[in-house]
Image 1 (cartoon, rainbow, N blue to C red):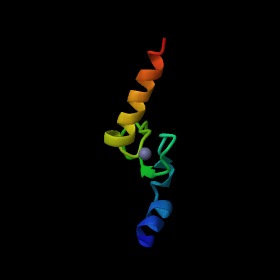
Image 2: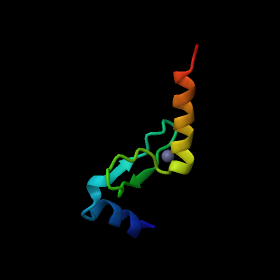
Image 3: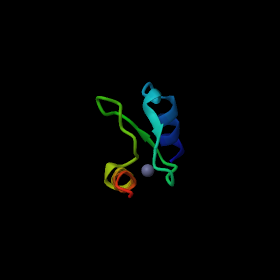
Image 4: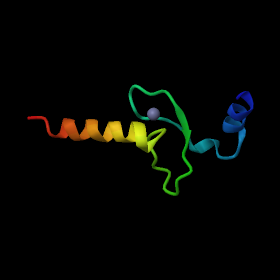
Length: 61
Ligand SMILES: [Zn+2]
């Protein structure tokens, strides 16, 4: 566990380590997507939740 954390913060891809944008999530993730525009630790969980939340707030009366 400690070794993987050290690897995360010391390797050359450190610039792509991000914090998940979901307000109730504190996970860090490694953005290795080509565009580096990834915003969430997981599209299936936080990404989905935040999309639904954004959709709901856009459609408020
Ligand atoms: Zn998250």
